[in-house]
Length: 137
Image (cartoon, rainbow, N blue to C red; front, side):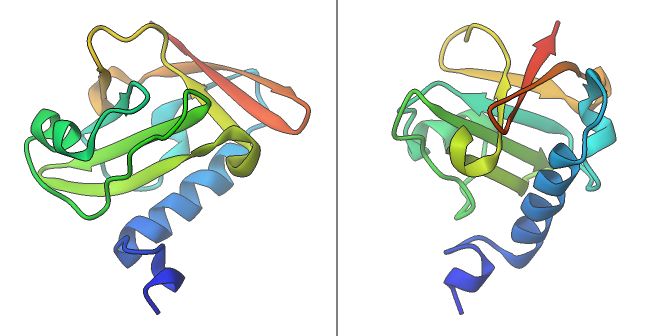
């Protein structure tokens, strides 16, 4: 049963991960606001540089969670949506498996944080079955 809910992820995180992936796959425009493809409440989304440890991630976000995964390669997408002191969506995987890749630009340190209030916008391009989303600052 543990793997059915996302190998350690809470059921709400698994549900939000699935809803988020479906929303990204359904994008038909060349630009999209992150708030328009998140059907769940969140305060901040984080993305971390490759190989950032779980302990470092927990220190940055300010709490511990079983819903945090570490990247093991430069070719992975990692998005950690946080509401209060709770992870509400945790995306971590290769673009070829996810079907999409988010790019937030250069890291200032080992992470980038974007607030829900920023209403972040992304350019959307599709190539070889992958949806590429590039952050507009």
